[in-house]
Amino acid sequence: MPDLKGLIAERVRRVPVSGLHSFFGIAASMPDVISLGVGEPDFATPAPIVRAGYEAVYEKAIGYTANAGLKELRIAISENLERLYGVTYDPESEIIVTVGVSEGFKCVFTAICEEGDEIIVPHPCFVAYEPEIIFAGGTPVPVKCLAENDFEPLAEDIRAAVTDRTKAIFIGFPNNPTGAVLSRGNALKIAELAEELDLLVISDEIYDRLVYGEPHISVPALPGMRDRTVLMGGFSKDYAMTGWRVGYLCARPELMEAFSKVHQYAVMSAPTISQFAAVAAIEIGEPYVEEMRTEYDRRRKLVVSSLNEMGLSCFEPKGAFYAFPSVASTGLDGDTFANRLLMEEQVAVVPGSSFGIGGEDHVRIAYCKLYGEIETAFGRIRRFLDRL
Image (cartoon, rainbow, N blue to C red):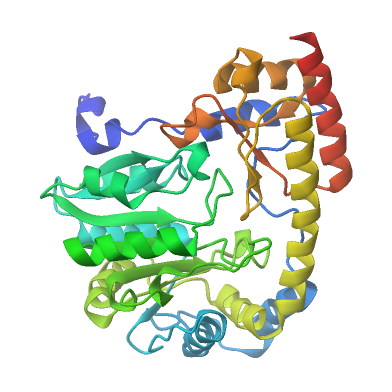
């Protein structure tokens, strides 16, 4: 029998199993749990978008598409980005349709990382960013974002983390887990730093349409940033299409040629049925996006006001559908708080430590749940706090 442990690559062995998913597994096995943990829209995919997918099955040739994706979808993505943010991409050479943004991570990091290359990653952050960098042979370099700065990365902190091995700055805003957005002033400072140091910027903007009370700042639309930025986007969150698995990458042709190599050998093309549905999402989905955003905003206000009233300090998240309160006032760290809340009151929230440095005294609350369920969950949280 071979040494099976020795067969596993060291870069894979040093990535821990996601605590996030382990926690969800425990919660799923318990009765009467209200989960404020999973970051997935509770809305069904809008019926006309679903219908477009069904119609494609019966009326169109459903085989592989071009590696880069359906031409009509790439054209629609290009036109939509120009309409929303004034940034243009050539559908032929500067857009690839991916299997969600997750596959986009793999394409980009595999294409740009030599062994030991460093990618700066603001923390707290989505759990998949750093593992994908490590799997590609790179080294993630965390930069801590503070609540007093509304969890935005500061250009001076990024500068301090840069070395001669730094390849790129990775940012994901609106942010998972904090709900923070990137302000224009701060975004401009990061853009100036990237230009000064000749660094690539990789921008995950999967939550771009879920922003409340202010416009989304799209990094490639900033002065001088279009050709220095890799834009990642998709349909999962904005259009409630998580299971359809459609995302996209946008960048200059020289980069896209490299990303395309990884993409074509890994998956050939994104799901064809889903691509037809994504075309419909862009063409007819705007009223549904607005309806969902309005309801998320209503829930957001309930969650943030309730947390602060209970003494769990929470800055106002302006994007995505997450709140990231501090639980330090309870005397518990985030892990202990989340585990006790689950076991004692059957409410699932996610320990902030799952998202990297800066999250240890926090928990993530996803408000993509029915308003009434959120109210019930917060009644349980109040009862839990009263016993502490």
